[in-house]
Image 1 (cartoon, rainbow, N blue to C red):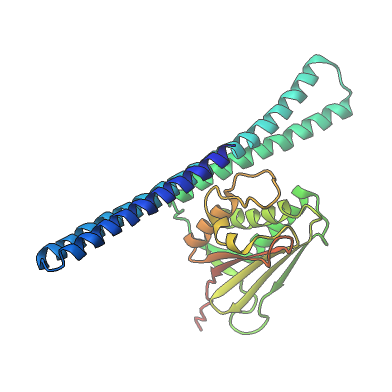
Image 2 (cartoon, one colour):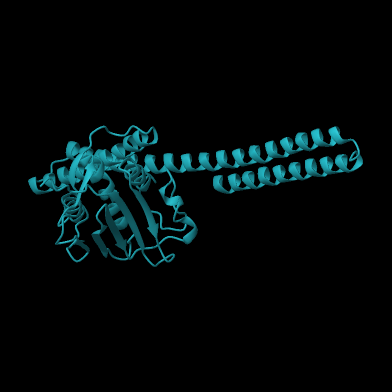
Length: 308
């Protein structure tokens, strides 16, 4: 209901702005036609009415953007509230059960393990929000050291397999690094190890979340040139409509046509911010809904220098 009312508000303000611009244009054109022999008046009139029309258009664009931004903020708040409320309710239920009745040791251990999982989920949500806030304020870390990106990706892949209970065939990792030449086996980047782990983990988690029919993810690390490393995460999930491929990297944005899964709409925004902080970029490719998605992360490679 709320989304429908906001769409009506957007349509109203857009139509209202267009009508005002049209009226201003008609009045201005009529005035110019009636006074076309008055040179200086016509010139000033053109400038005046041009400014009015420009102001109306810019004001309408601003209002529409603000309405959409507020809608995204509300969606984010709802998502975060759900992400926080669900594990808290689960932990409370386990604690109340332990408090009110006796349970055997095996069941007690099961409760403890479930509470630990819920706690990790809470911490993950909080970390996502904090990281997104830092990225939005462009607080780039000053720590820039040589990092073996191949090792980072392998660690993230193993973590994803453990976290999501995946078999090796569900999440396959391959590297295509050159085995000869001055850059043989070099997968180093100059960056922040923690941020790089966050970026790769977010890509893998996103691919798992949007593979409801079964997880089949292919991860490939490639070095197409001496100065570039390319990480591709390809899934066979729900896919993304063509007109949404660039929007998914915006803060709070979530594709409406995709199935409703838990999340805050911050994962890919954080990946893009980290890529930019490291001088790289990230983009998505998909043939459409139901046809899977490939997200590509490109980072500048640390070039080995032969000092001999």
